[in-house]
Length: 455
Image: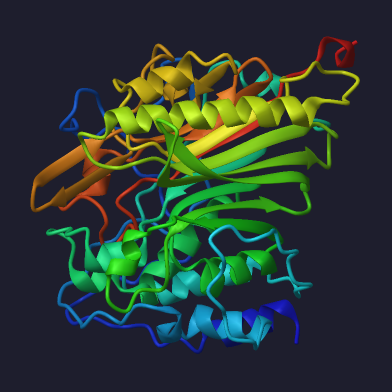
């Protein structure tokens, strides 16, 4: 069976939960570009927007915003067994039952899978989500002067960072009081997550709060040409939720056609010399186009206010590990001194820019800069928010998610802007039109040209 038919057959097995009331069918072809602007966030600044000298470009979008639906339906149970689409897909790739992985599993080579057509899978996601309003429309923003740095022998590397919201936490613990429960059911929410990934098709994908890795993300993304690595939290709060799908953790995917793997490190972060419940994955990749090395890390630091010192200590521990890993990775290279392998660190740091862990990263000897500062007019200010939610304790509008990069060796060519308050809506996140309480971050980076290569 060819990939398009195979994908269609698998996806058609899912019976999409319908809701009563009138709905506007989501158009499958791009519509007019949404206007930017909107009202101010609860913090200072305006959501979204690029630099004054930057250029905005419409990123291809499968759908445009529609009116939210009315009525409710019972939420589907959690877990891979309830998923007809992704559960059947995963079972078709491996008939053996999925065993609970060890806390720090060895890297397993991806199975030799028939490739799935990403365009076909995206269309099927759109069909499954036609009763839901579309995701907020977002633009790619090009900071001033970046276009001239792009060369065909040094194409950009697209990186996506996203806390996707663990299914067990969304339905069982987080208490999003303005989000209807059926908006969180896994039967449809997984389509929204995959639709976001398929729309932008990153070369490197860094995810947090992944509790459906083995039955959903690994088999699906492997069939799309990605290699995946997963590391669960030692004591995941998901395990406290009845009918959970296992622990949540961090996942790192890279496109096999673009990179080969040199080394992987699975880290359990420490604070004051004591192991904590937070983890990180670090991989050293070799770019197939340029032959250059790139070190990529994904992490998720301790949540909640009152834990600032622990986050700072975890950040210090991660930075120390990254210094060691990048030094080891660069040893033996003829064109670079030890410690000069370019580095990208993605994660939900659970820390505002005012926290000490942010200052540690911005002042590190590794020469890191935060990519999303480039959206501001002065290039020095983070977005007003990357997460916006309403819980019983109140409304929370915060900047917690970051893409750090070695600014001496890498340049940021463009970034995906931040939706406005108006686009997010009065009930905030998550919602019928957006699957997580955190926004995805995305940027295109490229290796800075070395002087001898410009001659």
